Length: 246
Image (cartoon, rainbow, N blue to C red; front, side):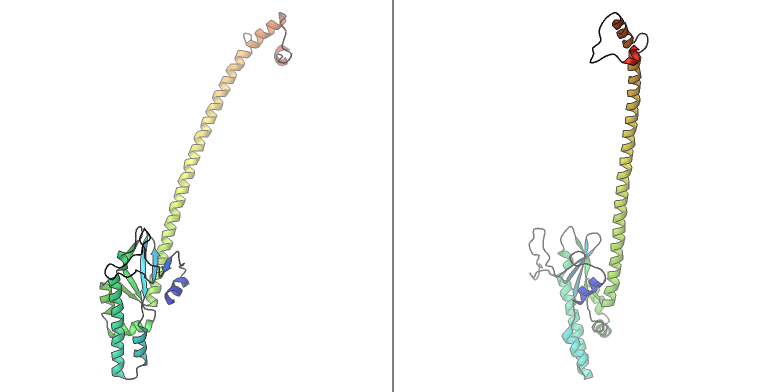
């Protein structure tokens, strides 16, 4: 719940930017199971990263061991409770490393080759790291990135920046694509306009030639006028133009 609230507070949208406790399935819809344990692969959160990549986040916290440590008054027993708390965290690391979620994310998506183990209680993590300084590096060697809220917040900010840059790049590609289409259409429009202009010039030339064959001393209209003077009658429905016969 704390993890989801953190994601929501950073502007990530469930079902779009991330999925919560969704069982991983293959392309055919069948549930994917761990090859070693046979259990369903159901990470707490799968955060989608640009480039068809996913970041798997599992929230782990040793509530019982840490609670016993905090509330134990005896110093000797307190250290024992703290060691149990550290061992609990190491067990979580071992469990996540064994699940190896990155192997089971299906194409076209791929998982970044480590899983984030989110410990929402900052104090619980810091006291464990103080007790066992090798806890974090040992986990990292197993491709498990132990993160508190503060560190996860920084990671989410970086992913946000990556998404923003990705969106800007995609928008630039779209702008370039639209611009190229527009230039292509403008070029086609100019070609067609030039063709229309050439066709009009040719039509004007043909029209002028036609006018020459109609008018003048040897034109068709002159011969028609001579026939009219010789006594041939005009078609009343289609008389010769007055401008020519007057």
